[in-house]
Figure 1 (cartoon, rainbow, N blue to C red):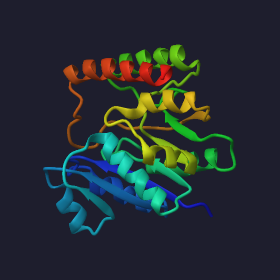
Figure 2: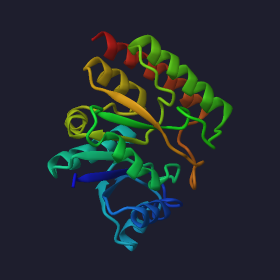
Figure 3: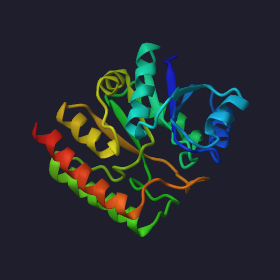
Length: 228
């Protein structure tokens, strides 16, 4: 049986973290670790209260730093696969077995859970959809591959990618940039359909102004990764 680690990055997720971990534990027996990314609310208190598995970062490193911490943990503890599961409840833990079945025994190095590769119930805001379409076409230009849901964080990677991500992982907004980087290195990526929900608690840290910054920064660094 392959060893699987579910990595849950969490920053100020007191409203959703317990529910997210409870649903994960009730739907699978895979190991998990919450990366408490310098939360300033009651997230750490909840993790302690319910004796949940977590690593505590003393300062907020952002999603990239939190995930790289998880990948380093996975590498040191010899996990074969690592899965990102967002703490806000958007990702359905029952889909994990689907992601594992798609990557086990296959030639793929990363499987992305997509809301758009097939029709799903997810709608999302107009602004978010515009951003997703923008990055879809950016990836087509830079890599030649089709990724319908390039901003999806619901992903599983094999040990080769765990090793890559433990060494280097973008600090923030990493989803698109890592696709460019992995494609350049000839790793194989595939999308499969998953169902996702709206955020189950808390507030997204991505404001309209940050969205513009996000698109500019990701575009710039993706281009750099592709060229150099």
